[in-house]
Amino acid sequence: MKRFSLPFLLLTVLSLLLLSCGEEVVDGGPVASDDTDTTTDAEDPGEDADDDTARDTEEPEPGDDPGQDGDGDAAGDTGSDDDPEATEDDPAPGTSEVRLYFIAPGGGNEGRAEPFLVSVERELPSTPRIAHATLRALIDGPSAAERDLIDDVSTAVPGETLLLGVTIDDRVATVDLSREFESGGGSFSMFSRLAQVVYTVTQFPTVDAVRFELDGQPVTVFSGEGIVLEEPVSRDDYLDLLPGVFVDTPAAGAEVSSPLRITGRAAVFEATFQYRLEAADGTVLTEGFAMTDNGAGWGEIDITLRYDVDSEQEGRLTVWEYSARDGSVQSERTTPLTLLP
Image 1 (cartoon, rainbow, N blue to C red):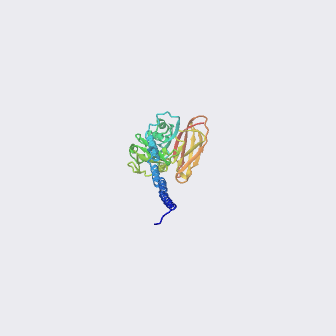
Image 2 (cartoon, rainbow, N blue to C red):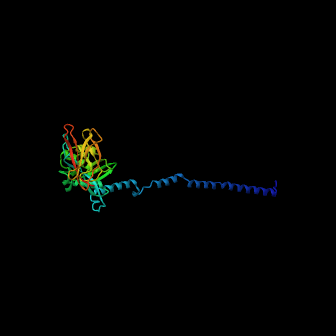
Image 3 (cartoon, rainbow, N blue to C red):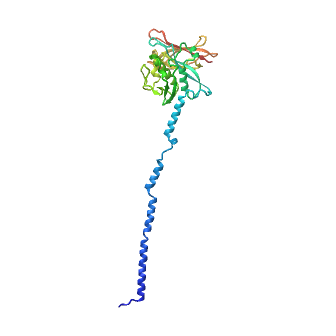
């Protein structure tokens, strides 16, 4: 039998030991693989995206909803408008001069019978809700002083009418009145009361037209007369309620000084009308003729008069036209004023 030397045996044992160590190094490889898996779990975009989405889509608190805030403001405005006593108990810091539109004789001609609208100045306590206050004054009707100032002045607006609200949006005023506003009958009365409200509200520079509501409901056909109100109405819809020469400003009862600006509308022959301003004793302070801006149909009046008085006194502004047929005076109306030096 072949014998192995001692050195050869030692070398063999060492080789086996080395082979055994190499297998342990190779088995350690999966440790690196475990580190990679851990890193992948931490950077999983799917889970991060779900978390972010959950945070982004949380329901907002009711107070943070702009839509709800807007609705709340609107509701607050409506509530304020619906409260007719909201500001009248507070002491007013001053007064405002407004115009109320009533019905009075004068201004008719051969083709158009009077009465017509008349512009009357009224002093009211100052308030941010001036349109609301002015409409309430209109509903109350002419005062005793105004009845003394203008012969047979009247109103077509029923005194039992309640003003339920006024809102203004995009130059249109929505006026909410109680059902009493359409009580009674007769087309002249119905058209007149609509015209009174429209002219009163559109005196303010932020309003061009009026939409009517009754007891909170939009009006498309008004009263038993069947007056169609499907769209907002403006001053032009009620020209038939104006005298031939209509002085809008100065309104009856106004205090005026020189130079005196006169505005209004007229439908006169060849766009020409006459005017005369008199002092308390009948002295003619100035007179003449003027023209509107339209020779056919209704035109605008905008003229300026100059006069001189020594003291405050009553005065009268009279306007009229001459008939194209026979030269007679027609469409004549007088506006009482207070003349200041």
